[in-house]
Length: 323
Image (cartoon, rainbow, N blue to C red; front, side, top):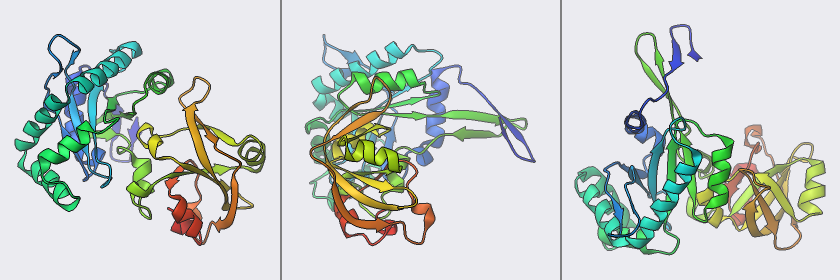
């Protein structure tokens, strides 16, 4: 229940997938932000006689000027679908996508052409970032290596499903939960975290295209026993679509040190012990750097993994320069 002095809001579970789809469309601007375009036309992809699927939509992500992406979107209800079904559905999307890239591009282009404002947004992005036109922009996104990305929007995410999505796929799968609540007077509230919100918070001081480092908070015992002695760091939650960008890991030692003190090059990122978290192995022992102290704004101290760039950290005077 959500409550204030005026009204109480009770959770209203979705009975049908179409209700979740309506909710996504209701909150899409706040959910995805101004640099992403959500297209919800349902068009079958895949080759005739091969794997065919009907995605619930596509998300064009223009946040990273150097690496725009397209996510194939699946809306599902946890109560109606077994996790095996969801995993198989996403796998089939990837197979259909890879075998029909020309068809996917044409489908997305047709959707954009029916939405003049969305077309203009893509056209503006293309002009500003060296693409001849929208057609070439879509071509470049879809035909590049490892171009498939999936987005699962679900009403409730269990740890088991999240673990399966990490362990079964080599391509990025982002997951967003969306719940709805209704007051006695009929007003609706929606509960969600904006898409890749953790990344958005860290791009105030560093462009998303420059991100190459994950900054982790470390207590004294864990820092020495793991980060220094074992040349790794584990049990980290990461956005799957950000993993290819991570080249370094930096350690922020919590109070009384209260500073970033070491940085290491990342050799590999793997699932951690059949969980929904990851372990990062270092190429070599961490390098001690000039301390980057907390500074005057105590709210900048990382409480969980944060994204930044090695160059930004090396030249920072305080955490206020990092993120």
